[in-house]
Amino acid sequence: MTMVLIVLMMMLGCVVDGHPDMAMGDGERIQMGVLRKVDAGLCTRRVVRGDTVTVHHEGRLEDGTVFESSYPTREETDEVEDEEDEGEPVTFRVGEDEVIAGWNQGVLGMCVGEIRKLIIPPSLGYGEVGSKDKNVPERATLKVKLELLRFEAAAVAEESVPAGKCPFGYG
Image (cartoon, rainbow, N blue to C red):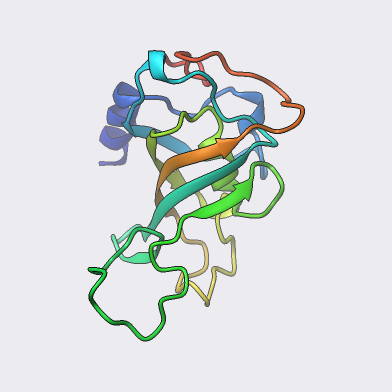
């Protein structure tokens, strides 16, 4: 099943392999597929390290349990006790350890409007201890969907990825 998923992800988009920015955390890499691709003509610039990005996300454990999501889960008229962060996208600077390493790898090379599915090994997620706050057990492999809503270019971009090119050598 895992091999089928990897082959499918390669056919749909890019699998992280060989990109210098991807080698973080003991040399482990995420696996990645593109769920929604942006037309090359609409993508004038891709995310690079140092950019500030805003994403919607949904995190699942291997068994499919959702442990975190920024997507709205209710109608505006529904009442909930704690509305903090519900439906609110996450903003972070790429490469600054503001999020787990798998997210930093996963957003590199994205275009606004693109949606990616990431498979993040424990060493690039919550590691040996997990996250009690998020109900993530120790040594958990994570399945994360990231949707790039917008980004601000860094004052000095480290490396530019041409529009229409997969930064990982597969497209």
